[in-house]
Image (cartoon, rainbow over all chains, first blue to last red; front, side, top):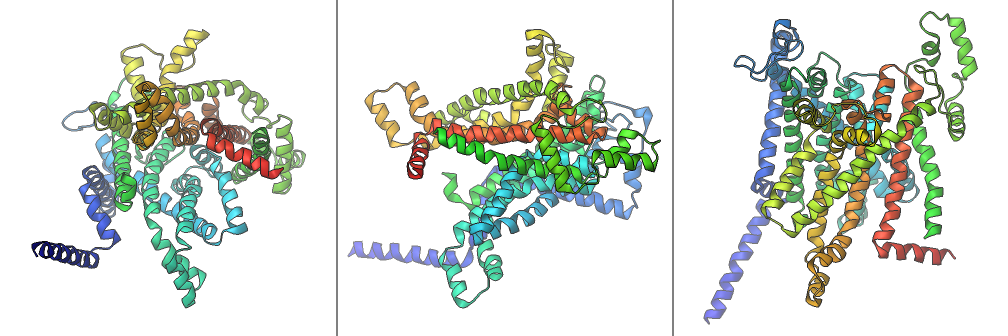
Length: 311
Length: 320
């Protein structure tokens, strides 16, 4: 008798929990809950959100003051403070033209973040369409697209970026393109693989039976169901993009001077390393922390979206 | 197996033609007029047009591409605008230096990264595991050229142990000047190799055959190397192979930081001087290197994993 009671009680509770649980939490809410439990990933997310806020704030300040602060503190040269070390007034010291490094770092946030994010978004759209078409139709279209992607993949991304910049010239848009294009095949591969794993599932068949066209099936049923690995890969690629942007600017073929891009601050550091160590240390730390945070968010997303992988 | 290698070598041809086509197309977008660069600013329209005619610069794209491939097969990459010598000579002069740097970089990442990954996996959640994985996270997130700058700051300018730039003379001179650039270059792939080895090892470490081997009384070191590592190696080889591309791209930055006389530094100099044939030659060389390494990685799978080798043999049987 007591046995029966307990089993009934055991049954009741989980069923209740399961029903309410399913109704209140979808995949994304569930993933978010798991993500928040990951302390490192949460810290990474907070850092990234802070940097985005800083970048937006500087854009608003520039707009409101008609670049007055930008011109005065970020661009204007003050040779009396040339290579000045860290002090109370300039906590990170000054660069080779006497400009405050803290100001330049803050105003440089926009380049790394926005070019990094926009270039990956662009690559995601191009790679996504190519990968989805290849994965969905398979056959000769798949073969054609993926062989072309293979050819792109056999050029190292930084080398291709250098080739694009050297052909098109420097400038923000060309930089964006040079960072973005090498990432297209990488994202196309991921999208193709996940589309292929989804396209033969029952709900796709059901949609087709109802009479949905290919475009509707791809965009409404296939892509939403393979977003998880794509988001993870894209978030990790933003980190790579930021490193490549810094690298190109360091080589002097990225964002044009006097814009305060982080990598270009390091370019100057090389010349003055003997006299001013602080220029070479601090911008690198900022880049590292940004990329580290992005990688932590990416790892956290992977664990949150695909709990199977965690083990 | 040999038939498979031959097949892969034949398949390499279209990939290389395609790679060179992409690179040639990108460089063709440049608005630099070679004739004007060669003749200088003082040239008249007439002489420029004449040189265009001579060099065939106005021919259709595919004709010029075909000519480039034809010349390339004869070892001719065109004339450098700035050095006024053959680009292939300039590249052949620097190629061994880039090989030396990139090879040492890959070697370092393998002999440092894999043991770290193995130890971290065997002592999961230990202090060593935690510290090394945090270091790997930091290593993978730092710009390699920045690490190079910091190394120069510490080991050259303050301690004076290693030279800050250039390539030394003689065996020990070269070795001494190789240390900092090689460490800088290998940083990312070391971190990646360690992380991949660790996670791949963690999968094999709990397999039943490991318990079986232990029960048979096989020594722990033999189990680690023969039973765990060998089975965990495929993803590691993939990661190291893919990282070779990152490493080649990184060599451009590292060679610039350390003034290392390789292809990477040459390509940057050439870009600044708008020396298009040199840039093209360097990019083609680096891409071809990467393609060949990818092929070697694929072939290496067969030697590490008998299952893959068996597949090739099966494929051969079927072909017969």
